[in-house]
Length: 240
Image (cartoon, rainbow, N blue to C red):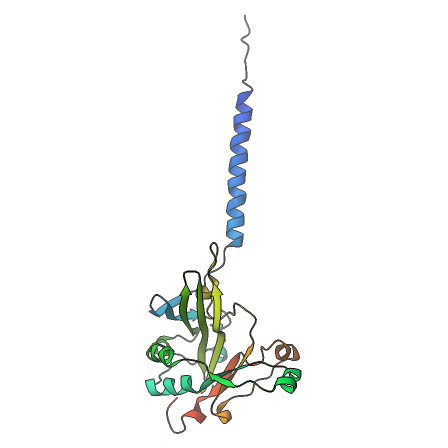
């Protein structure tokens, strides 16, 4: 019997290796892309126009099994009550003791302009009415300057008991829109895009709740990035 010779082409393993290499590279790129992806905070939109929005965001720190940590949501407020709070909020440039000694203290400025208050009041009333016990209200206001630059003011708020917690993440901050990649300012309105250099105040001093902070918070100007207001003192005799 004649034995047939089996001839194996050298190109077969080469093609197989090329295929394996391309598949492996695709898998690696997919893994890297997944690793670099920025998670989206679960949210519900209450109001949105081309440059502003108000949303309800899930707060991962509020645990369903721990009711004492829940927000007092939904919360009912009148337009006049929300307007009163917004008009009483002020911002002051943070200065260390040596700066105040040399150049004096900085003045307090209104946190929101009249036009911004007009936008926020009805939307915050509605957002607080719809909010669940584990959702915080976030807001984002922007003023386009060019096609790649805008000025933003953003942050969040929530109610716990009779206390309103108001967070200012960015205040009249210039944001350069990246040509590629993630646009962080709209995705995370409560997160500062630059180092904070301001403190928050309310025009009714006795309504501000003093919070305990560390020396590092004070040095980094983070000691007053969340303002707590006792609404029972702002609106005595009114339901809050």
